[in-house]
Image (cartoon, rainbow, N blue to C red; front, side):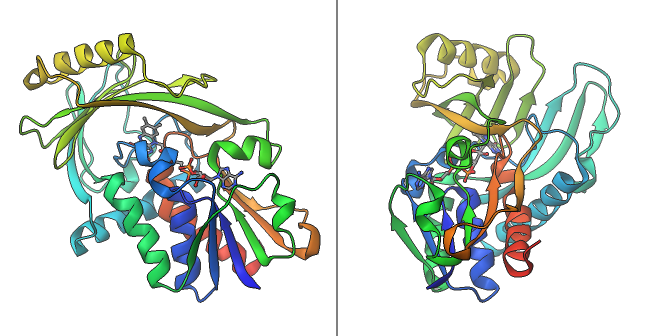
Length: 310
Ligand SMILES: Cc1cc2nc3c(=O)[nH]c(=O)nc-3n(C[C@H](O)[C@H](O)[C@H](O)COP(=O)(O)OP(=O)(O)OC[C@H]3O[C@@H](n4cnc5c(N)ncnc54)[C@H](O)[C@@H]3O)c2cc1C
């Protein structure tokens, strides 16, 4: 019998598996989709707690993840790099709740400037899955119909199923927040630029090594996973206004994904009720627009809960 089964191989499931394995547990990851087909593959993915409420627990996860990703960037982890950022501030405000996690955060007239880690998910997710295998874990493809199917198969089950937790955990607080993004060729940009309060919709420009991810949308309760043309054109227009070097850029690709959002914030806790066979159930879902940003901090907490039970 495994010590832990982690259900889900998005960024949350894989980081949990790595931390559990590092702690000495025998771990099996079970996933309906290979990592390259999860919602996590679509994350832009820049450290930033998008549309996430202030909460000391969330700040601690964000802080720990910031430090871990910066350390990984310094150690040469694939696709991880520090990213200078400019954020347009439309309504005058004090420093945001997450600023204690960002060492060089600085307020300037009309904008904030800071450096955060950015992650290229198409290379980072396979690297995480390889880390799981190198540490002695396994990744198996299977779709379960109910969490109870895995009762008695391991001492602990970690439920890292993202949006699917709405049904699997019977949690009506979970809802989709649709995001559409567009990729264009990189004309030499290195700085991320954000205008989260743009009156026509959240707007961001995130350069990567080979392209630039342009966004975006945040559409609660919209289940449409297909990108639509009018939205792509609106994103291109807003991003070219924000960063003039993008004028005339044509899409290389476009995509839409459903962020696993949750009223009340992410659920990272032991379920009070064990599964059949006495398997302890630990939930780790509902990270909305901040799954990458909170991943390593949550993974450490899940590993702690799996070990101690609380
Ligand atoms: C356009 C877009 C841009 C984003 N940008 C950012 C960003 O810049 N920064 C950031 O931090 N976050 C960003 N996010 C959010 C981030 O992508 C999510 O928070 C994160 O991917 C959630 O990860 P997860 O592992 O919980 O879920 P997922 O990646 O959805 O993984 C869920 C896993 O559960 C498995 N699963 C589900 N049901 C079953 C079942 N019945 N049986 C077996 N397995 C099952 C799936 O196969 C999958 O492996 C963005 C999201 C989108 C859509």
